[in-house]
Picture 1 (cartoon, rainbow, N blue to C red):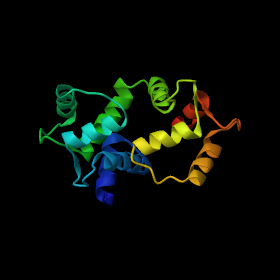
Picture 2: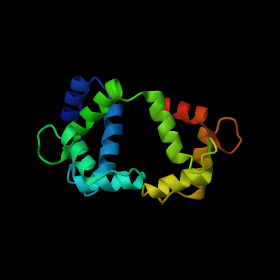
Picture 3: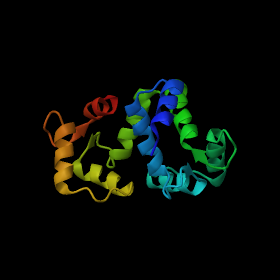
Length: 161
């Protein structure tokens, strides 16, 4: 967990809200499988594999090296946060990122995400404890037009909030 002092310093340095920092920390913890406070190459590779992202050992090393500012061989939270913040401001086109993420969920490529497709992605990410009731509630929140599938517009609205 992040202490109040660390959060305050990160808020000042990166101009993020406390909520944003805590959200990023939750993502970081997902990558940090062993909970030791840093992301090792094997952990990064495991998450990328779950997301069906194929990278060579060389690409993985390059990714790690580009983020590992202190050259410790691992990615600590502040390095991870710096990568996300820098990436969002400079490198990542938010609309393209939404479309790319949507395609990860849209397994059959029909332009919509069904409850089954959504559940498959959660399962691939290791979130297999989600019940059918949880999935129904999630779909009701996202599926604004009630057609029992998520369009790119509905998905984009969710991603922007």
